[in-house]
Length: 316
Image 1 (cartoon, rainbow, N blue to C red):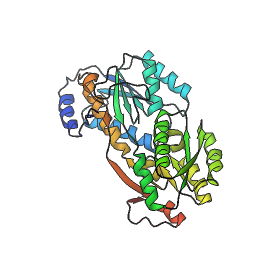
Image 2: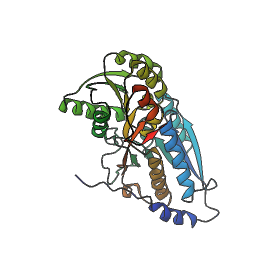
Image 3: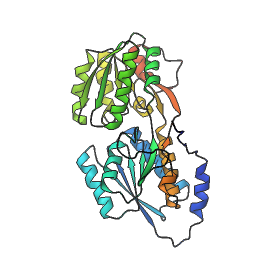
Image 4: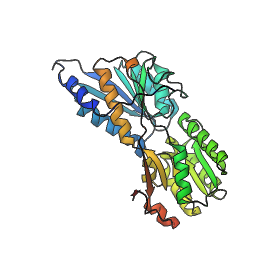
């Protein structure tokens, strides 16, 4: 397997020098930035992207950002991306898989930077992560499913049956769930699942699982992440833990994860965008796979379950 090139944050300094050398009368660049839904993880990614872009020299007078939120509506994602094309933006930045797929479907000409896409190839965005062949590259957050289940085995060793809660329409979730099923099959664990199509279905789906399982597993699913308060409440009532695919989902009520830093994906994505703006070809900008994982637990959630998590880094 070819080694995927991981860009270092140190490149920001180089990009900043390039950006700072531009002439004062340079044409303002317009970026269309789309996010499929509001939740802590995606908000953190977006905010860090913008902050880093400014930090490396692309101030508001040089780069204008038109931010749109699709509010969980796939039809709106399509409309927003088509509007970006009509507006002739110079770049589209798409946060998460649904937004990236919408952007890719809307244009094969405008450069696209995706942020936090777990499986770019399976999502149909490109074929070669090392040398993107089209108009798109970005950052990827592969969920370390095995590590999450090993963590679950340490914290709640008696949890043998897991309830998988996710949106079957999200490619990133399907990838994580396939890995979760494989892990369970290989380690004597059983599972059942409930899928949702929208946030309005999360509560009933979670309740349908709660009395059948010992624990929940929710991947880095945008629909579930936007409804973590609902999931954590159902789990608390049933006195079962919720293992999740992102640190921000722990912050929002999940019990624990081995997850990536959402802010890192925004920062690295801004560095990619900066290199594009400075003239580098997309084929020369490999997909950046963030592989630094942190174990994180929610102490309040653990206390409600009577679990000792003093050995782990905690929030709340």
